[in-house]
Image 1 (cartoon, rainbow, N blue to C red):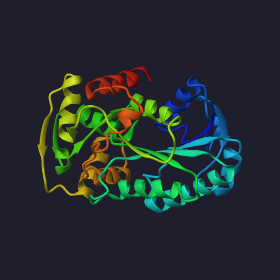
Image 2: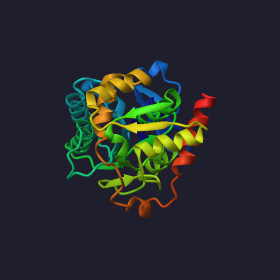
Image 3: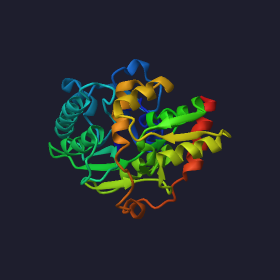
Image 4: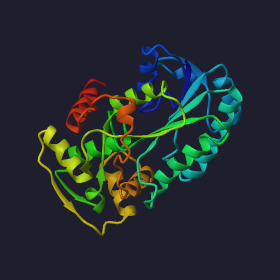
Length: 292
């Protein structure tokens, strides 16, 4: 297929583009700065926040991946909704057969954070103009450069003892970046229009993740949960000890109060392989960072 990747220079996109090319697809890397793009695929200008730029980028394509979000912006929910509508209309005008979207895990019946709520909204908006949407929902993606992973790594490496908010007891199901990319490539050959949930084999509390990473790096860390540490103070704390800004940190901290584990295991039947365990994913991320 001729496939457009919106978000081609991002954390997932820059790994997805070469994987798609290796699978034999004709890759179009949509980016706001095509002259600076050095990854796999043909770079074309396109900005999901500029509806007029999308028609040329999507013309002639069979399918598209949507890997865009505005988490660091103060009005990210409104911006992401508008961007999804822009992309949906342009995809319909271009006659695309499908859109593949990387969303977030979380129970619909839960009181979802603004971040996860926005991800759900985008799922619906991308299909609003009639193009079938395949959704891959994932939790924390373990890979060099991922924001949630970087928070975990930097907390472990910067602090010998951590006074942590209550979200350290929330369960999550992390997944290796390589496995997310493998699923995304495979879903291009699955009939569109379904929602799938992806996770690795380990279900861990955030506190357990911190301890496991510390063990892999040969560090001893003391973790002291403080239930009354507010989300605002928690996000400011993250901005002091990691390089994640307070606004992005606040959005992620809010999401860390939601349990994000796989409930629907149908993806394992559609794309059968054994995902990487948490420890192996961490080692892979650390090796990539060391070689960067």
